[in-house]
Image (cartoon, rainbow, N blue to C red; front, top):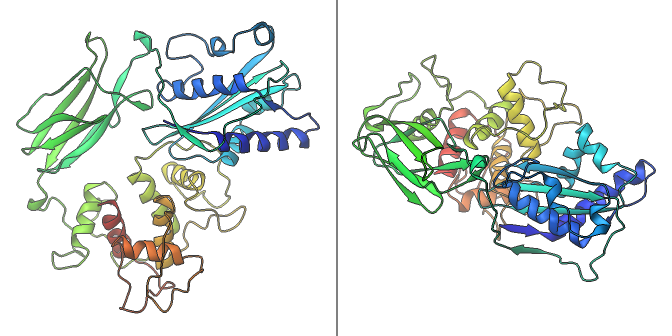
Length: 418
């Protein structure tokens, strides 16, 4: 996993800003508490709890030595579905009364902060606090480092489960799913399919690869060597060539046909009716909801809705918006409003996708006369063209301000995720 020392240093500054505002003294980074925080962050990637994977209390991670053992010791933990910035981590703890109390404890004198980015694509933050005077590292590490940790795990802490309880795959198209222990991927000791005439299973690095070989339904099982713990997943195999989805406003000759069928397979469409609304403008709430679904519908870090105009949305849609804001995919249209019904332009849609991709660096221009370099959407447009997500509306124009209809959005999503 990757340890980001620079982000931890930045986080302690944000922490101390909060303490200064409250009239408290600064906390000093302690080198031994930093090591404890790194250890705990790596453990949280295996078993996310204040109980360690070994079954022991987090208190046993306190550094050895009388100066620590005779002092107050506490920790805050946090996980996110992507790279959670130091500012967002501190703010998330700030919004939680119990975590905030730890950060504002007047008895604390020193702290250790760690951010690790694990192989499952999740971030794990840990703060450790002590009332002991800090032991300062004269040459603290900066930047990032890729490290490997050995984490003891007690048998009772091994509770494997497949990341989704059901899965739909298309014939002859391999799909990867993960077996998880808590939130971290693990390699099961025993892996089997209940019906290999429907789906076969194999290991691909840390993932379980599903290969559909026949239509039908089968259950796959991931089990520990002693057979005491097992996870399962129901797999449905469909044959897309048979046209399992039927919409009156979509025909096989439409350029967006494959995209719409893929979106239907991914569960993005409400098939209670028989139309997609392919020429209906796409709204901010719809776009965010689709991105959240394609990310696996992760739970947002916070349960607090920061916007006042979401009352007409479902619980799931509000979760999607909190997640998108936390992931820096979008912000509100003001401090208190999200404007969920506002329709999106082509520039805004490719910007959403560009941010989902992690804002990769780009060079050159898109070659469009209406995409000036340095414009807020220019990098997104260049990236989208180079990734084959769009080719523009003509050879020389992108038409960034044109309303983006659902068929275009589905096509962009299809091209990006495939």
